[in-house]
Amino acid sequence: MIGAIPYLLIGTPLLLWAVGRVPPRFGSYATLGFCANLALFGVFALMTMLDLGPREMAPGMMFIFGFGMIFGALWAGAFGWLYARFHRNFRILQT
Image (cartoon, rainbow, N blue to C red; front, top):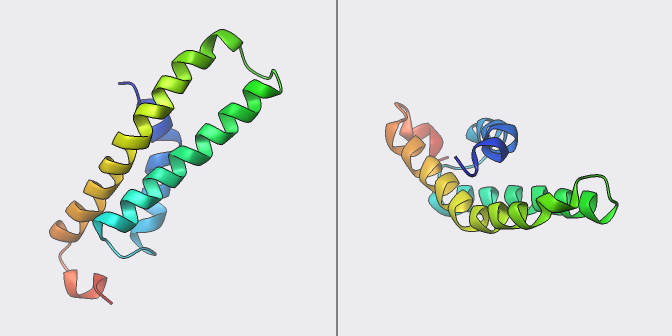
């Protein structure tokens, strides 16, 4: 449940966008997941520096984003790998 909100807000729309544009390989989707988590972390860090959010949330959010750097990338990579395996027209995806 740790990464559910960032995944639902950023991960799901990004993966749905990538399905038609990025070849379904583990590495490309893992990179996409890592970069999305990094961008969301940057937005949170900027909000914290500008005092737009409660400071007491910062340590917890740092843990969530640190955890997401590893597992968000692994989940996105697994999604790309599984999508390629279950897609009916795999030959179309290889082009």
